[in-house]
Length: 159
Image 1: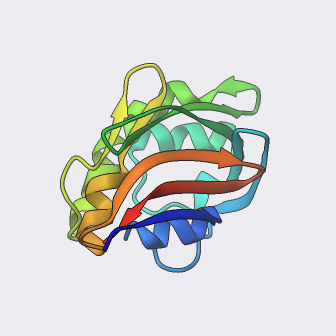
Image 2: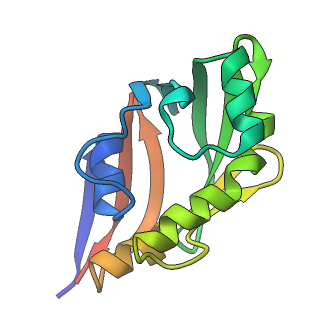
């Protein structure tokens, strides 16, 4: 029997469901809020262990990062997010590519499918929600991912 599923989750709940994090957000994310279709984050990257050297240097200049994420598209269970981040007025999203290898290391260390989180050109991130969800909940399928007033909205089916 296949059932339609509609879930509205906090960012922490969503990342936990996908196996990317524990039940709580990492301490370097100090605030999550939202308005309409945007998810707003405030982070203090100085608290991140093992940052790549260029990013570590950047945190000395601007210790707080404010980012806005928007879902650009969802195709075959892969959600693509645009990232607009600023640190001290500087466009921090341009440094996103420097974190790509660190992100892949964290994903594979958790035993999750390689390539399920990818940093794309033009300050975008592709999150293979379908693959991540299948690794945790076989039989589940994702039809759509969106943000609404600070929550992550997942629509799909469960077997």
